[in-house]
Image (cartoon, rainbow, N blue to C red):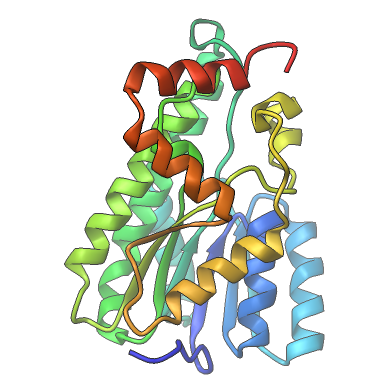
Length: 266
């Protein structure tokens, strides 16, 4: 395989109104891909779409949508069919987290978190992977997290959702071999986005240095451009070391160490 040629492609990006989603949009537009931008905030999407159309002369379609609603994959597929759009690549980036002891979590927020972080990723992947495999020249990127590599006290649900995304995506990588579709689970660590505004505290970063969205997306696109792309990639050397140590160290020690990082007062 050679580097991905995004010219003539149409890439669907969820969570595109800010952060990693907006950065993926900018990078892929610069490489010639038309875009379908999906998020709840229409105004943000329209601003980004106008910027990318003017700068890169690509077609950009805006689809405001709440991905916590039922059947987001089918709803998106129907919307795009009505617009006459055929997607060849997908970036499932939308997601959010909650912080605090699990027994104090708000049940409604929990349901939305599972809907966006788990159900929407699986549902959208299923809705489009058939046509991505048929096109055989694009990518499916599902954004997981460093949190996928170990349990996360005080972010227990978020870590579990991202472990699901990592496992699902690596399995799809194997199932899609030989089709031309490149499948990748991207696992960033703490990144300088609106993520912590939504979470409601910087403690969720565990005191670690924040990466830039640019560095994270560069890591993903470089992995996809390899001759033999991997099933998953972790952004940042320190994060890769941490993930490796979490696999080698005794499980009890790993869980307690993460718990100390996210404890109150860090």
